[in-house]
Image (cartoon, rainbow over all chains, first blue to last red; front, side):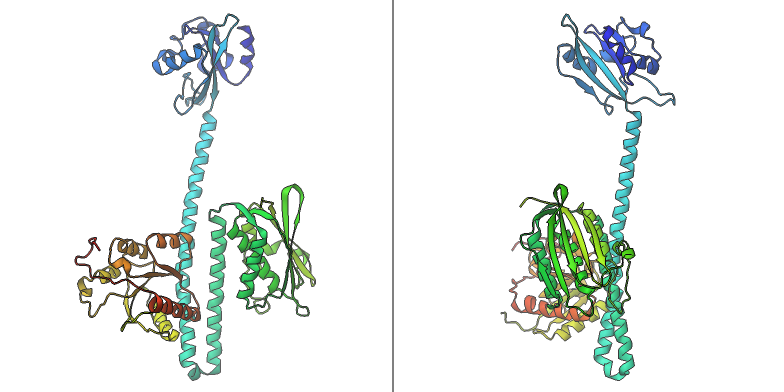
Length: 365
Length: 162
C-alpha cells in the first residue's frame, strides 16, 4: 500500500491492520511515539506490538470493520492508550482513535487506525472546566452578597426613616423648626440611600440573572413603559410622542422594559428650565436586521466629552440639588443591553437635548 | 364581609424596630378591624405558637391568629422552613400567611409561594408606604377575605385528617 506513505507527513499516528491481525502499515509518527521501527512490525502479527487488540473489547469491533461496517471511534475517555506511548515529559499520551475500513483492489478490507494525540486538548479542557467551576463559585458568593445587602443593609434604614417620621409626627411641635429640618434631612438621607441600594441590587441582578430571549412587540412594551411612568409621575411626564407600528425585536421583555423605563425617566428628568419637555420615541431599520430605537428629548443635553462616562456606575454630571439620582440608571441600561446582545449610545448637543438609542435584532411578529 | 369580635394577627419578626414600626403602621392605617397583635421573634416560636405547645399552650392567652405576617430571615428556623412545616399541618394551613421580607430576590419570592405563602410583600423603607400597605392588608385579609374554620390540632407535629 505505497499510497499510504503520504501519512508519514501528518501529525497523526497511523497504522493498518489486515483481517488476519497483521500490521501492513506503520507511519513515522508511530515510530517516533513508540520507538518501534516500521521494519520490525510490518508483516508481523499485531500480538507482538499491540497484544490488547486481540482482546474482546477491540477484536469484536474490529471484526465489524473487516466485514465492511461503519468506522469506529475509540475515544480518549474510554480508550486512552490504544498505542502505549509516553510523551517526552514521561506522561502517557492520551489518544483519540478513529478506525476506518480500507478496501484494496481485490476487495479485501483492512482497518486504518488514525490516532490523534489529545493530551494537550484534554488538559486544556480540564483547565476550562476548573475555571468554569471557580466562576460559578464566585457567582454563588456574589448572589449571597447581594442577598445580604438587600436584607441587612436596608433593615437599619427602615429604622432610621421610620422613627424619624414617627418623631416628626409625635413630637414635631416640641422640637421646633430647626429640629424638624434636621429630621427632614435624616429622612431624606435614608430614602436616598434606599434608592441607591435598590438600584445597585437591580444592576447586580440584571448582570447575573438568567434571562430568556424571545420575540418582543416593541409597540406594546413602549406603551406599557410610558403608561406606567405617567402614573408613577402623576402625569408629569410631559409630552411623549410615540411612533406607531413599531417592529418586533429579539429581547427579554422584562429587561427591555427596565432599559426603556430608565431611558424615558432620564429623558423627563433632565429638563431644560426654559422649554416645555418634549420626548419622542421612534424606531428605524438599520443594516443586517438591526432595529434602532431612538429616545429623544429637548432637555439640557450632554457635553461631548461626557457622553462615554455616563454609562458607568456612579458617574454623575450634576449635584443632587440640581438633579437627584443614584448615578446607576444608565449603567443599568448598558448592562441590560449587553445581556440582550444589543447596543446603546447617545448623540447630544449640550443645551439642546439628547438622542439616546438602543439597537436590537429585529424579530418576527 | 365577616362578622367577628376580636381579630388576631401573629407577627413573626426578629427585628424589634420592625415590630414597633409595624404596630405603629396598624395604628396609623386606622382601618377596621384593628387587630390584637401577638409577636414571636423566631421561626421555631412561630411553629410552637401555631401548634399550641409549651408556653403557647393556652389558647385563651395565645389564640390561633386570623393572619400571620412572616419575615423570612429569622433565627433558629427560617420563614421558608416555617412555611414548609405549615404545608404539612392540615387545619393550620388554612390560616393565611403573608410574607413580609426585605428580600426582592426572585428565588426567595418563588420559594415562598412554592412553600404555600398566600402573599408576598417587600418591606418598604418609607413608613408612609408601610402604613399604606398595612391599610390595604387590613381591608383585604382581615375584612373581606373569607377564612375557613381551623379546628385545633390534637397532637403537635402530626398530620391530621380533615
